[in-house]
Picture 1 (spheres, one colour):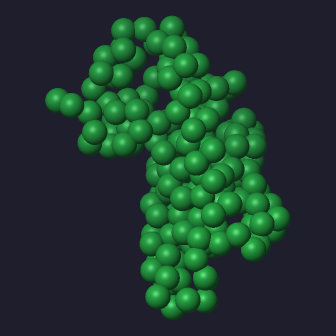
Picture 2: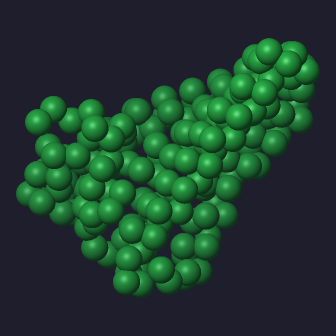
Length: 168
C-alpha cells in the first residue's frame, strides 16, 4: 500500500470525521441521552464488549478495504472525487461491493453500543440512510459508465452491503 497525499487526505476528511470527530461532538452535545444506564451492570458490560468487538471488526474492514483498493501502489482513493485507477473485485471487494461504507457503519453502530448513546445510534442511522440513497442513485451508475460490462457482472455476483446475501 502506498500512502499518497490524496489517500491521507481521504482518511482525514471522511472516515475520521464520520467515526471520530462527529461522534465526539455528538457525545459532548448530548451527554444526557442514553440507550441505557452506563453504570447498570446488567447492560453496560454487554454493550461495551459487543460494541468494542463490532468496532474492532469495522476497523479491520476499513484497513483491509484500503489495502485491497490500493494494492500494488495504485493511485486514487476510496473517495468519489479521486477514484482508484483500476477496478478492484478481489479481496474484501469480492465479498461486498461497499466494504468501506459497511465497515464505517459497523464502527458507528459499535460506538453507539459502547457509549450507550441514542444520539450516536441516530447518527449511525443517518449515515446508513444517506448511503442507501447515494450509492445506488449516484455511485453505481458512475461505476457502470467507468467500468462497463465488468462492473455489471460484478454487481450481479457480489452483494452491495452484507457478505453472503447474494442469491446464487
